[in-house]
Length: 27
Image (cartoon, rainbow, N blue to C red; front, side, top):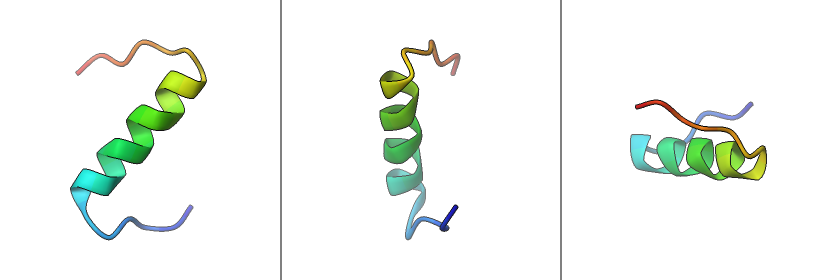
């Protein structure tokens, strides 16, 4: 896994994959 350029991109990627796997993310 490559490190993101910023936390915003990291959260965006995380949510993207979470939705792709149809998972519920608890904040």
